[in-house]
Length: 170
Image 1: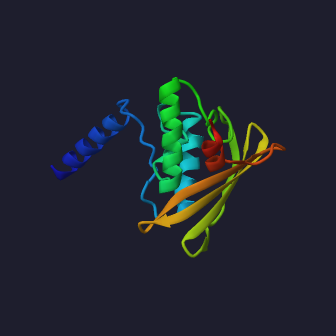
Image 2 (image 1 turned 30 degrees about the vertical axis):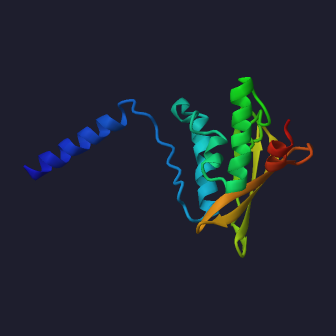
Image 3 (image 1 turned 180 degrees about the vertical axis):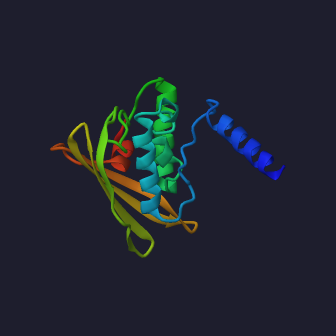
């Protein structure tokens, strides 16, 4: 009888998994290690390329959810601008993948380099065969690592600092 219940439970689990329920991002927003967290994000992006159910979750908004107080204020300013103008303001691309579309390969997330209450993680990858490097700068706030800025470098383009991009937009 116990074996029947086990098989029934497995059958229900399989049915729920295949039922078309929304796919979960599986990014732990409370992950203590900044490198591990970024690996989860880039894994989400890779999976979203072949799974449309994940595409809405794979956006730079995932960074906003773990931004420092100062970076959160800049994103809010951008959101207010977009709401007022009902269009794009400072951010018109997804800086996580350095583009508007992605075909990510060779993703490498480095270990966090920690100095006191600051940490930096370097992520290298190719997007449509363009070599990209993102530097994520973290600050410890309220005992947690928060993203304080991102510097993106795509191909031969000049680097872009996200906080500066948000701050300087008029």
